[in-house]
Length: 156
Image 1 (cartoon, rainbow, N blue to C red):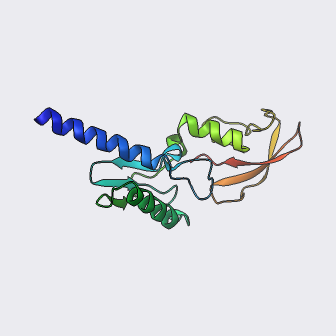
Image 2: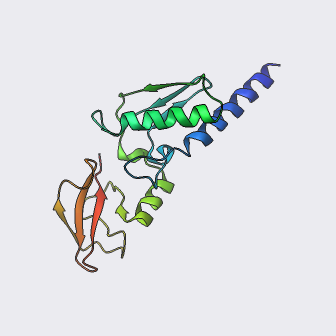
Image 3: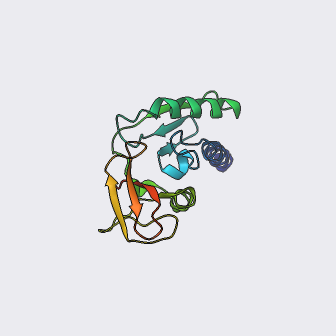
């Protein structure tokens, strides 16, 4: 019976993760909260979320959307907690998330020195136009080859 209980638990956690994978980030809706890496922990009775930064204005919206998704899927008894430590970092964005960002026209964060890569033409002949982009976690850049402006997800 112990094996059965652990199997049931694993199935429930997998179902919860599938539900969370359908919750979009309100600022970058092409990404789910799983892609973004803000789902810190999933257990049979709790989902822990870490905002991209402690003052992120989308935190409350994400929490509400997560609650709605869990309730719709029949997980009304699963609680949600916000965890600030350890802090979220851009290294938590999944590979699928990086691909979705590029396809959406946002240059994903990179942990190497040098310019951002243009998500449209892949050029690295780019220049930061403004440290502040459409959201606090992005900067505005422009490509020197295709001349297109684009958001670059700041690395932190």
